Length: 130
Image 1: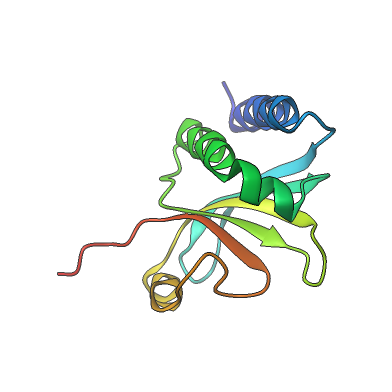
Image 2: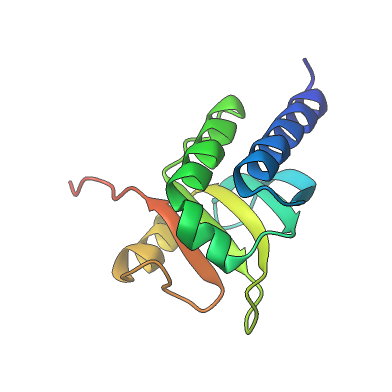
């Protein structure tokens, strides 16, 4: 199976799971894998119809679905988050990221589910200090 086939299959499966869970139309309009210049890499899933309240109510289910999707894409799901549209209840994207050392330190210093107005953390596994 090609990478594009894998992305397409996983995008579709996650969209169906979210629609069945939330009982409303949720659209995953695009799924991308990325490698950033800083060293972070992962996947971003652009969404429509997913709201902040959905995350608060169904967080454990959404986290588990995103974790499984990440694992299917061979992305370690140690940092899962939603990106919010600031000033609204709209979720712009769901993200699975393998953090570079610098970005890891930025998030490790933060506390709570919302270290920034545009980020809602679903899962953050802290690294062991050496």
